[in-house]
Amino acid sequence: MEELSDLTTRWVHGWVAARSLPAPEDLGDGWRVLCHQPGRDIEIFARHADHDPASVARLAARVADTAQTTWLTVPTTRPEQTASLLQDHGLTLLKRNEQLMTADLRAQAHHDVPAPYRLHLEPSASGLYVEVRDPAAEVAARGAVGLTRDGAVIDRILTWPDHRRRGLANAVMSALADGALRQGIGSGLLIASEDGQRLYTALGWTAAAHVLIATAPGMVRPQD
Image 1: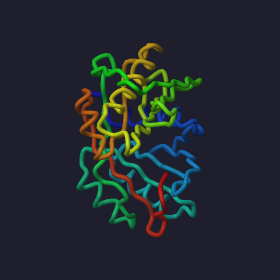
Image 2 (image 1 turned 135 degrees about the horizontal axis):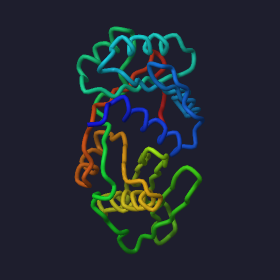
Image 3 (image 1 turned 180 degrees about the vertical axis):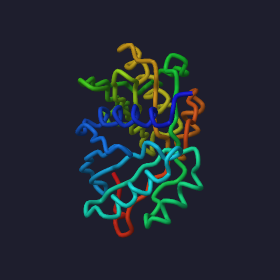
Image 4 (image 1 turned 90 degrees about the vertical axis):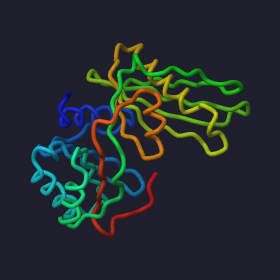
């Protein structure tokens, strides 16, 4: 099985591609990304949480000393120990039940867009953005994929409340996988929320690690 540090590195580079963010800065212990998003100016991704817990402690100290709102995202197969470490170093847990998931996109179950919805694709130099629109041309679901030579990272899958339970997220996932496969990329990565894990598992995705997200006390703000 691929090392978690390598999966994390591939995920970070695909994620910045999906969101058109600046290239990540290599901190040694992890990756630092300028997000410039509401409630999240900077995000740091730990690379070696399982093999070197001290690296997480060093990153936590960096987050605590940063004036800008900074998230520390930690993929780990030891979530309880890692959560305790983050809290012991003064950080507040924002999320503790997300998962880093992988898939062979060639094996992902395929779903077409159900009528009367229509699929709209917006390719870019580093990925693909997909929208599903209703008959009034309003957006009903969307998602993106960042493409690098090392794989495809699925990001921001969302279905609007009035359009849920109609298979639209499945259709978005299929369109994103097809876009990656057309570029010769068959390896997929994503970070799944608790709500999304059932969807991705049904499509053939497999959990590789838990994902914890923490920040400094007083830095918790509304998220996008």
